[in-house]
Figure: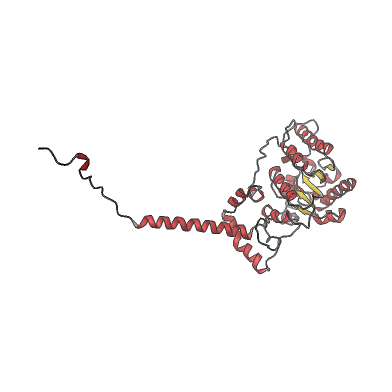
Length: 344
């Protein structure tokens, strides 16, 4: 006997359903809470502007609390009180904004970053230039051996907050999501809210002499012996290319009216290149690269202190091969002032 119902009308098998668990709701709640916390933290960081970049829509007090120059430069570099700046590492750290202003009448700020190279320097120069309402009057750049690199990537040896100075807003916002930025929150809020916190020195000057003296560099026999040990200091690039020099020239050509002073910083005579050596060839090649910039670009001068001078033979004027003392800094400043005077 045939069936009165077709196979299509047969009842479909029942599929067992797993009852909902409380974990699904917990995960969703957690995800929403985490996202809200992340967005709230980012919004707060953007508004309180931990390092004084000026990106916040709020009107906040000027300056930042005392901190390292790598982050303090964000605030200092946009300070309208200054129309000229010093860039480089500790090899030009003793150049004094106050002394230069007294000699030239130009308000300088020091935007040096110890243990930095050309990659960091170019970022800071760009930051300073684009945060001026009027073109900068002068830029001083300490071009030591690190600026002789042939590598266009200009690798940096020490960490640096490139995100802080980025032209890309997304990169800046991403950079705010860092643990060290979170650590800065309370200090920043205290600085902004109470008005009682100390402000980082606006002109950025940092005299390293006290640090070196405290470590015995002026009297320790071993350190004094190291000073007298010959060495090489020219970077090893005799034939080019000179990637940092090219990048600096391209950047400074965007502000043709700004004076550019290229300083080859003083070194102790024991590391000056021996004539005829590979070190001498590297030194000459790099010097020529920056000399050509001074030749091609208007209002540009090269001040070369990597030459054999009596001051560079006095061990009492150096802590180590590349870190000199205040009297030599005053002489370099005098040369800078004279070069700027010739450009007027």
